[in-house]
Length: 430
Ligand SMILES: *[C@@H]1O[C@H](CO)[C@@H](O)[C@H](O)[C@H]1NC(C)=O
Ligand SMILES: *[C@@H]1O[C@H](CO)[C@@H](O)[C@H](O)[C@H]1NC(C)=O
Image (cartoon, rainbow, N blue to C red; front, side, top):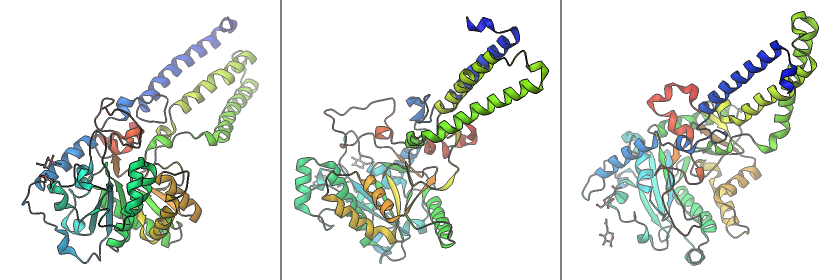
């Protein structure tokens, strides 16, 4: 056994290393349980709805009040016409979903914490993207007409009925999503002159302070742009998942470089120590250096990568440029100036094959026009939809331990920890 070829000191050092490594392994595992880019990721921890669950309940409690006929809503939309001086239009496109509808949560959670002024500055529009909107379980709920400014259907927006009927028949959900997204965006664009247009999917929940936080961020973004620190931008992401922010395979040369550099530095330091320090000479023998450089150090580097990038380098709270690996289109705030281009581009892509997903098309336009894509960290919204008909399944069932979860792991871990009281032990947070 090679191990016994080493002298006593060397053996002790190797044993000490093994013990240390074991503890580091436990520590890293504990740190990165919730990091989807980590090898130690555990779904039960990662998808635990620590904040969303309470937030959903809170917003539904608010909604219940307006779910009774005759309830008076303090901000009836008609009184705040014309739609000038709106700060933002919120457009929500809703479809029928398997298992559960979350539209009520979405609509309630974006307004239940607003001050009257803030609520008046918002125009909330919901588009029912079904040829027969009455098939949608929420379509004639009492709360809908009470707390939403405009309830749109294909009849009230300028929709290509024949195309839609054929897409519905063919169950071409991807192409129909493109069309629906465009119609929802257009409705918001035409329906108000708000400088910001927030497009939400019908299965997100907003954090309590989302409005203030988002508006402050946008003001800061615009200041930065006016001072030339930032280029023109297409959207600000109010939701992102950490899932795609891990180590990227295309960056392997960078990772390899740093790994090799680390090994080289350790080797260099060890060799220098052997030359300079007499006492180190019997320890730092050639076989020992081989083990050190090609076993011990690489194992630590491996542990570093296994632990996941987001755990080591969490995103600072604030606004970030996220021109790549940002996913998905659950909640985006658009700069009104670029919405006409986007509308044109979406319309153009609707007829093209292969059909691209909405978020891909948005990225294509941003790339083509050289527009920045920004993100607010931590996420202001969470994706709580459990399922969508985009997945082609025969049978729909609840899976996993939680009813609240982003389908396909489209989930923000940061959202769950950022807004809870326990957020104080940030060291373990992502
Ligand atoms: C609103 O009321 C209707 C009818 O009473 C009920 O079926 C529905 O679940 C309620 N919705 C919410 C979100 O409370
Ligand atoms: C929804 O509409 C149908 C048909 O108009 C009506 O029978 C039903 O009572 C309505 N439901 C609610 C909750 O308003």
